[in-house]
Structures are given as C-alpha cells and as structure tokens.
Length: 615
Image 1 (tube, rainbow, N blue to C red):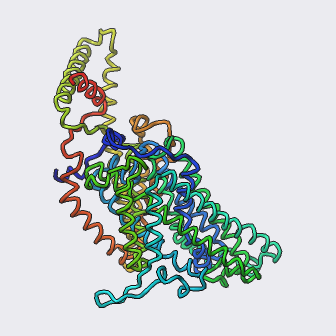
Image 2 (image 1 turned 90 degrees about the vertical axis):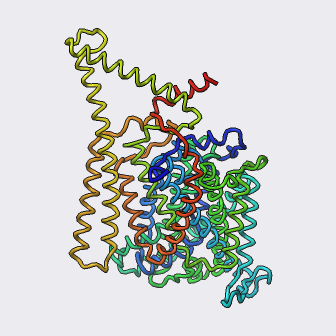
Image 3 (image 1 turned 30 degrees about the vertical axis):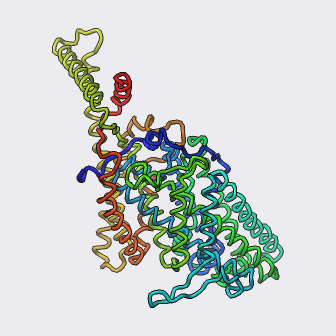
C-alpha cells in the first residue's frame, strides 16, 4: 500500500472482466464514425484564425511546410496510439494504456489531467461559439436577451456570464446521452458541413488565385521570409491544431472491430486534417501577401479583398460548425475516462454506471455537462486554455513511453484476485516442484557426461544461459528507457532555459543529449521482448521504427510541455496537487488492485482452470 502501490499494473482485459454482469457500452462504431469523431474533434475554429497569425508572424508563405512538419510530429503520437488502441481496446485512452504499461500512480495523474483538459476544453469552445453566432444577428448586442452575454456583480467583482455557451453545452450533453451512434451521426453531419466550407475555400480560392496570378506569392520576399527558424516556430504553434485525434482512442470499447478500425480511424482522421490545413494555407497565403493578412479574420478578409464579400457568412458558418463539432469531441471522451477510473476503483462507482437503454455512461455524461456548462457560463476560460495542452501533451508522452515498455519490458506478471489464493498456491507449488525436478535432472545428466537421449548437455547449458541473458536484457532495457526519459527532460529543460548562462546551459544540453543517444543506442542494439507478440489483442497495427519513433515523440512533446509557460504550469500544479490528495485519501485505498496477487503470465491460465475445477 506504500510506494509499491504506485507501480501496480492491471491486465489488458481488466475493464471487460470487471464489467461482466453489468450493462456494456454499445458496439456501434466503425471507420466512418471514427473519422467523423477524429476530424470533428481536431478541426476547430482555430484554423480560421491560425492561418493569418502564424503566416504573418512566423512562417510567411512557408506556412504549408509548417503544417506539414506539425502533422508529421502529430503522426508520431498517432502511430503510438494506433498500436495501443488495437492491443488494449478498452475505454480510458492514455489513462488505460499507462495503467497497463507504467503503473497506477502515473495512470492516475494522466487520468486526472485529462479530466481537466476535457472540462476546460469544452468550456472554452462553448464560450467561443456565441461571438460567432452573434455575427449572424448583426453583433453581440443583437442576440436575443436570453442568449446574450451580461455583466453581473458577484462577490464584489464583475463577471461576464454567457448563457448561450451554457445552453450549447447542455444541448450537446443531452445528445451524448441518447447513445453513441446517434451522437456520432450528428457529429458526422456537422463535420461534413464544416469540411464542405473548407473545400469551398480551397476550390473558390484556387480559382481566384489562378485568375489573379497568385499575387500573394509574387510579391513575397522569398518562400522563407523568417528563415527556417521562423518556419519551425510556426510548426510548434500549429501543432496544437492537430490535438483531438486522441478522442478516437477513448471510444475503443465501442468499436465493432477495434483491431482493424481504430488504426484506420486515427490515421485517416489525422491525414484528412493535415491535407485540409495544408491546402487552405496554400490558397490563403497565395491570395493575399502574408504581411497583409488580417490576423483575426484571414480567410474572409482574403475573399473580401477580391470582391467576394458574401464569403464572410460562409466562413463564419464554418467556424460555428467547427466549434460545435469540437464541443462534441471535447465532451465525448471525459465520461468514458471517468467510467474507466471508476471501474478500477480510483473513483466512486457512481461514474461507472451504464444506462441499460442507451448503453452510455449517462450519469458521468450529465455530471461532465453540468461542470462544463457552469464554467462556460461564469468564467472567461480563455486564459486557462493552455491547461488543455498540458493534459494532451502529457498523454502523448506517456503513450510513447508505454510503447517502449510494451516492446522491451512488457509486464510478465498478471494480477489475480486474492480469492484465488488457494489455486494460486497450489499451481505455484506445482510449477516450483516441476522446475526443481527438471533442474536436478539436468544437473545429473551434465555430471554423467550427457548420456540422456532426451537432452543434450550443450542444449541444457544454452537454456539456462538464455534465461540469465533474458533477465539481463530486461534490466538493461528498463534502464535504457529510464535513461532516455531523464535525458529528454534534461535536454529540453536546459535548451528552453534561455535565462541561464551559456556554459551551464550548453553543458546540461550535452549531458542530456548523451543520455538520450546512449539510451537510443542500447535500445536499438538489444532485442525486443518476445512477449510483445502475445501482449494484449494481437493482429492489429504495429508501430514502425522502434525505438526511434516513440523517442522522437517523447522529445517533441516534452519540449512543447516545458515551453507552455510558468503561469500555465502553476495552475496545472494546483489541479494535480488536488488529484494527489484525492488519490491518497480515496483512490489508493479503493483501488481494485489493493488485494491482488501477482503471478507469472505462464501460470495464469492454469490457475483459472484450477479455480473453476475446485468450484
């Protein structure tokens, strides 16, 4: 129950086992619905603004390359998610994966951070819808009074309340309670309409560009006016436009064929977003010189410069549709994460209840909606938007670490309930006697010069040598993974600490870089664990370029995490500290793994058979 409790790891199918006898989530999703969830959750209204800001301040005409690099960086995380989602297809996403591969302590922090991410993310999106809706009524003052923003004097300070945002959150919450199939159908329609608006921007903008000779490119001072560094800075900024595809993984338990559909859903959703982003940026930067772009309304103002003023209403419609789809994508995963944590005993069982009729966690969904609506109504959460990125980037980082653990040091023990203690002792004793007898026989044969027809003395030596070598390999692999993680932390922290003197900063960068390269070199040299072939559900997607790909993913996400700013980390630290106390006083003592017995994987099936025979 002490520090060891932080490293307790659960089985791949533990959620399914614990849910037996209870109502299940509906198996209703296939590839088209997963693409709708991924694209709808990813493409928010930010792209309608981000194009102008990044092009004008960082990348210039090279904005397309910035989107491409950011898309490749996001794809690194997508590859990791795709393998884990197909191997461990249960609700909970990164929380579930880290609980299986890393341990309970890290899993709790990831789950707690994701709760914050989705709550604030949903509130921020809802708060951004009303100004766009107001444009259709002629301005904020023209909205109906029951939807318009009002300033109230609460506790001696002025608070701007947003009824429209709260109403939208409640509408989406109600839709999610109807069922996963119904809500994804609506999200698919809204996403399709948003994509149509973006296709209009691409096609109509290309036509205007060919008619006018692409003036934006002809008057620009080169393709890289801010240099390669500016383009890379633009990539770091637009990377956050790709956050959202991980929502697909949270619905893993509701997918009909997770081994096939989840990797395709994640990959196609991310590819679609990257393609649309790049095509829109090519067109807009070509219509208007990058230095003349309006940072607030780059797309509609670009069309207005060429006399297409009515396009403003279409682009605004696209922004509203994008925000509505993103709101659905923000509120969809959180009830499933709460449900997964409650199944594991880390939260009260209230959150794990699944409605018999709709087959969704209705109670968790309603509570999520109430919290998000309250925040959206009372608070201007724009200043807290950076906290959303912390949860996502932490999840991306831990998922990449989980891939390394799965490949090199997968769990070789499984937790079994203490009620099976009699069967566990019986089977363990039998295996122990069997191993001792085999060892004694092998030693006897070796001493007699190997006259046995059954075992060659050289083969016996090789078997024991392989066992020892495998133990050494696992220890070396675990040490190398730890070396990589520490090296990345030192390297990224020192590279970002520009306020430090040059010598200690460069020295720390060198040390961190050497640790990172050393760990990468060892992991590239040693073999991966044979247990990876049978870990979880086999036959799904396999992440390529191990160990390079997940290590690059860890490096990129850690660098972005460290550069989110002290104010953001200060706010997140308060939330994480609250989570630590919740875990200490509730989760730790109610965990479903508090009374389990860990046994070797090879013994588990025999123990279950023995317990059934006894019963």
